[in-house]
Image (cartoon, rainbow, N blue to C red):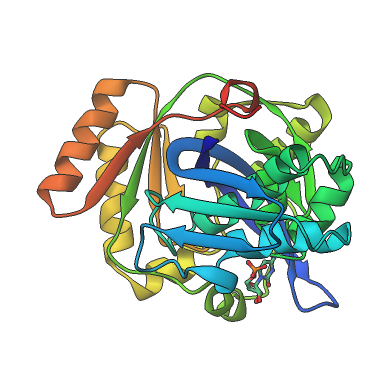
Length: 292
Ligand code: C5P
């Protein structure tokens, strides 16, 4: 079977504090978007997990998060005879804060639980996902979710409205451990964005057009201070008529949300004229994606 493994963007990201385990507590809205890898899974009972990827940047074999996902799942049920061949057509750029590898891992946990007939409950799948990486639990759900803790506390929410999103590769990568390590610890626990997310928590709904007007990402000042192109790209997106613009995760992918497709297209054209790679995409909702 072949299925789409969608990228995510963080619609805002606040760091609430450091945890005893060395990670950080965050609050963010994660939303899948329709930029996706294609994953083909061929299950077997030969006990072998094989991973091959079309990208030279993604490792084949045990180092790949897809391998780890399949392995952690079969170990959790003590079924070493389970096997699968995983073939990944990579379209989501690596290392850009779009969760490409984490998405592959979350999709594999969810899908192999079904096709290997394991019947593990969702909270067990989330625990296994968290053992692979902080962004993986979100992808066990997908769609749109309010995400807290270190990334393992997921509240699925219904998103409304359908903005066009322009993703921009600014031409550099940001290391996640570097970004968390450099973050100034003058952390805010209250802001318009956090108050808005508290209302999302209560209602279980988020209007994406409203959210785009309130985005805050704690890593943006840090990354923007190091790379002057960040401010240039965000200004260009806003001048083209975006409701709001920000960065996904710890970077480096930048994005804007547009109510009008023509404005989004104009932003894309202007960014490409300046030599940047830009993708037009749309939010993906849990019920509309092609998972069985
Ligand atoms: O879990 P993941 O492998 O994505 O995390 C990479 C690094 O990012 C961690 O080792 C940690 O330094 C940092 N991190 C953090 N708090 C989080 C997520 C990641 O400090 N909530």
